[in-house]
Image (cartoon, rainbow, N blue to C red; front, side, top):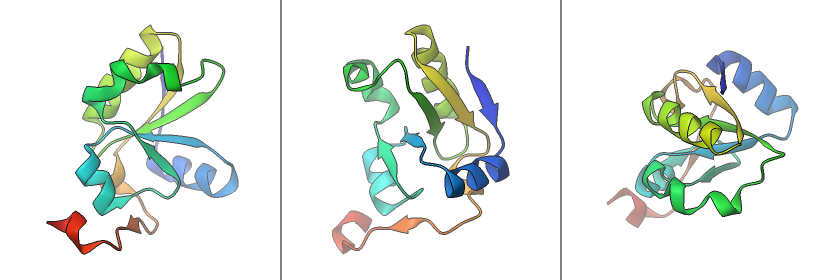
Length: 107
């Protein structure tokens, strides 16, 4: 089972602590803008990349609005990982997002 965190609490926690933030949006979405220090594993690729994750870590899972992160948390929880779903997703992020400096990522 996973837990949830509202975006304001997550933002404050991310400012104060070193968190493992897993962004499950598509790679092109992540390249354009992302929560600082997030790692991108698109939802569709998650089943093939669980070997890169550690069961003793807690993963804060985010997407655009919360739907993909819900699916990712459910999958990861079923496979023994500790997850916290970020409610509201990146579209609710109150801080600055990292932006791509590469114009080709926008095409």
